[in-house]
Length: 323
Ligand SMILES: C[S@@+](CC[C@H](N)C(=O)[O-])C[C@H]1O[C@@H](n2cnc3c(N)ncnc32)[C@H](O)[C@@H]1O
Image 1 (spheres, rainbow, N blue to C red):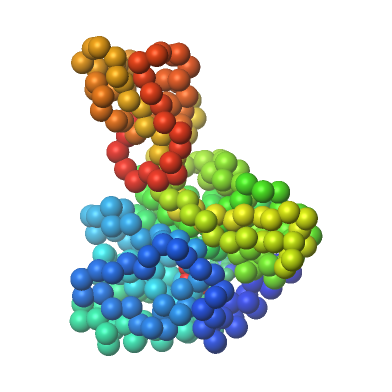
Image 2 (tube, rainbow, N blue to C red):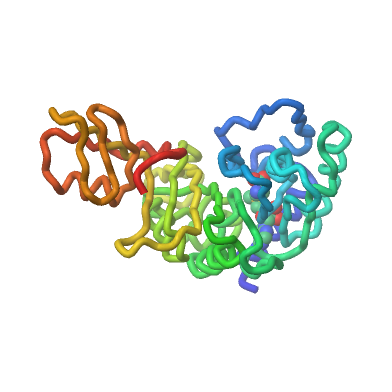
């Protein structure tokens, strides 16, 4: 095993034994849902950088896989929606984290009438070789783990998620990304990587790794400011701005002309007809917004029409649209 994976286990072993409130951070509000009480220690052990729990993904009694369980807060939130024995399978490589999560789930059972700890089954295993059968999962999630991996290991981890998902299953991810160059000295700092600070990729590269794993549809649901690595505290000549993204990758077949990636672009036809039809499956009603994937946005722009507006990416896409 390479050093950075050892360093990662070490960081999270300590974070399991002593909650570290500042370890990761999220500006995504913690879900407040009827009859959901999240034990204080789970909040203190919120080591994610966004949210991977989206009620819209969680219809039809899904079986959920959560990789890198941390203190169990999101595992509990997923169980809120699945509410069946073994409905949520948690996987983690650190024994101490598994034990902490299981203890926290016992507390959660005391605080929540609807919750039984049997709703969650926790297995020891690695994101790089999941102890899960092929095509058995409806919704898989990871929060702030995959950014730690080198590109080689990220490729493996995404392949594993793709393997275990059912056709049309969803992989929900939350990770830091950055558009600034990351100095090699920071990239190769095992501890900074483990702390989710120096493994970040530019968003387009991160999305390409996801689509290269085979996911035919990808939604960028949110992008928020996350951290600054500045020359006063880190080995960098310039500030490095990290953002945290929330992405959903769907195991849809890959379209012949490439993946559909939704980044929040919208097309609006404002001509004189009732609608505009591109004869490729997209009908723009007069002055009605239509969310379009980036591929379609570009194709519409290429038409060069003066009566169609195509917005920039908002990085806030959560449903509807063209493909
Ligand atoms: C940054 S924490 C995120 C925890 C949780 N997802 C959250 O949002 O609070 C990373 C988690 O991944 C686990 N982990 C680290 N390396 C792993 C690996 N190779 N496979 C599976 N889990 C791993 C750690 O023990 C820890 O629970």
